[in-house]
Image (tube, rainbow, N blue to C red; front, side, top):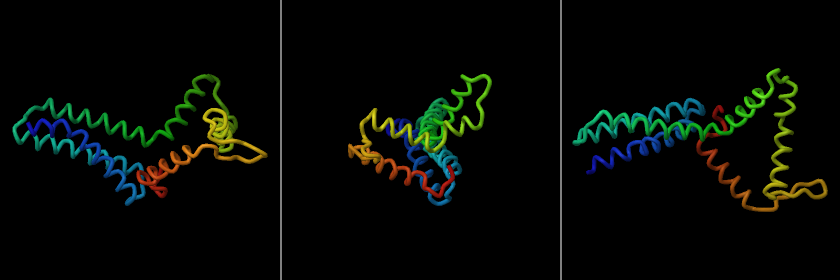
Length: 169
């Protein structure tokens, strides 16, 4: 019975080890892409090790090993996607714009659409009109709701923990 729980938990333990290893390596090596790869490998090794340990204590089956590995890979992929969300969103937006323009898009147009000023203008507009988090009075921006500040501080702390500033993107 105990072996069944180990087999069930193996992919989750692997994901936890993936996350911890990735965070530790990102802080030590200061290389995000390297830390993601090594973290995933550590999690996979842990998953396989737990399944092997469990099978040594009575349960056997290649099918269980394959299922646990596939489950771990799916979880690790989700974690990888989470780490790359900010880069992926801009990339997808660019691809969609190019898809709708068979004649192509000029570099100047891309720089105009994706400039820092344009991103800031759009974000401020959404925060002012959509969520009413900010207000604009007499040429100055003001924070209207503290919930956004709490969310920003929480995300910054998580970001600093997972991928330090010195690490490559």
